[in-house]
Image 1: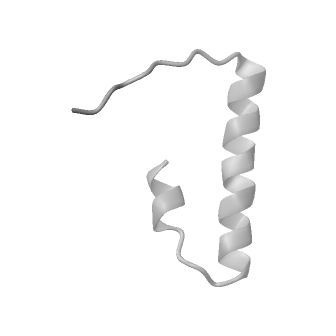
Image 2: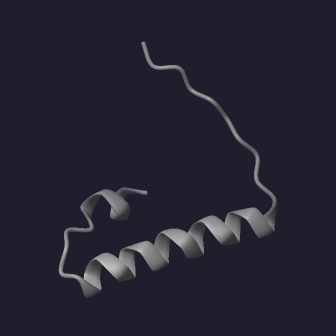
Length: 41
């Protein structure tokens, strides 16, 4: 059984997360690595 946890983020924290994930995806693309897992986020 998987336990689910809800986390509330402020707008600032949400923007940090989205921008960080996007930067990581761009880094993977630049190195020609797969991005499927990041795309699912």
